[in-house]
Image 1 (tube, rainbow, N blue to C red):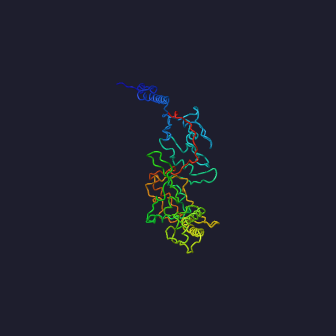
Image 2: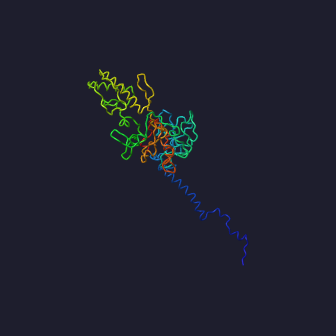
Image 3: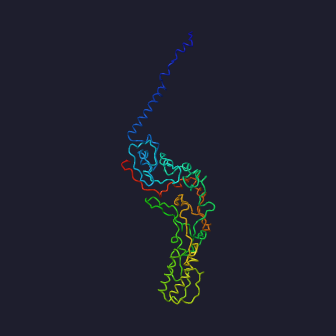
Length: 438
């Protein structure tokens, strides 16, 4: 029987096994060298072919997709232009570095966007809010966190902030709309009762009729159709005017014998029109001096003319009728809608200006077209409004019926708020040629 000691057994073990590669270790070492080399060669080959996708941060937005193969279009050093100065031309080739962060100057080469606010303390750069290389998205759809970063605790260089503090997304902690907060009132000075005009069987010029919201309020088309499949954009409601909405049911007749209506204008222009119309009538009909008036519905029946002896001259006839016709106009016809402020020296009334609000929320954007599937009264409580001072705009809770993260409709800040005043934009100075995008 052979007996081996521990020392003899230990001599069978290769004490330098770690210095030589065997099996899996050999493959692992080879792959750890071969794969990086292959990647470097691949990147070098793709770069030599002019393809920059391997070192791109990701696909650019839909609007910038045409320039995606040209990184130097955006990633270059260009100083932002001063207000009132033309946009600088593109930089030379020495500045075309795809590793260079995009500057405001590069953005303003194509987008002459006005400043976000004139009194902002720390003006954000374009890339602060508009993050590209996030896929084929719209850069204008900014994430709420960028808005809240500044508007959560807003500071200005001068004056108080004129916008409400925004702490979270709509509607969770969004402040109530200023136009419908408690105590808010319509500044308009036109006497109007929505409840009366929405009654069934209202007397119209051709008999009983029922008015609808769309009878008077129609969206205003703000752009023309440039494509046969594209609908016109309808934003705010078109302004209400006497000629378009009121004249059909509220004519300005002032005399039983005159078929014309008085102009819808200030009393200083109405008076000479009335006098001239009566003078022309009596000149054509001289026998009317002694003729009795017919009872017609051109003027209100509750304003009977006084019983007087026949006029002796056309001038006397005109003077009498002007005095009575003005009494109807100033005290009945015009006063039906307009509030009288005072009386001028010539005895003419001075009425309050209409002061109809054109846009209730000037810092927000709204388009009626996407909301056309719901009835007007779903958002505007007009049927129960009997006072001119009622503000019929919907409250925040009404909008949150659809516009909330849990409801599906877009509810981020950009949906309603615009951060650039595009009315202050200037024409862009072209800096590229078509050859550079081939």
